Image (cartoon, rainbow, N blue to C red; front, side, top):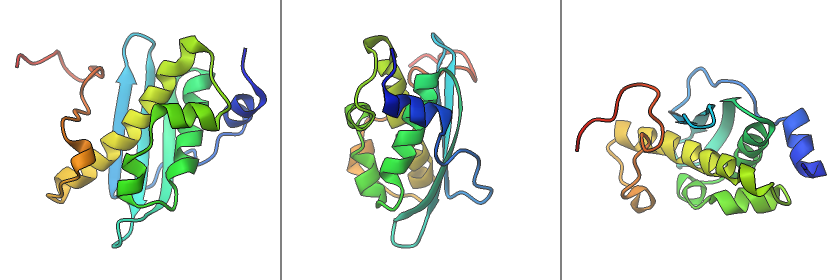
Length: 147
């Protein structure tokens, strides 16, 4: 079911853990499948992601996609990291079973959620975040508020 690269990132995930003094933390989850991802970013004064760590509660695909996503954004600028797509993560992993592609969407959203929180705390605007809501599809904190 899983290819070698996915198994490698599942069995030997890169960048696992927390960053105590992270500039950005994003958490997303999918209540349907129970996967939860938390992404920590260390961002320098030039908007470069100098370190990234993750904690994921979920299946092998959720762990593998989190691991790959961190590898893909480390050393990149915030704007470059915002261009990360779930399909780029899937391609970098040489594919995922169709039923597990949603895990790559979570990985993309975790990166965006961390950057969203970073931008919000610093009053920054990134056009790539326009319309992004870190709470969409991730409702383990409170009931849906009426719009």
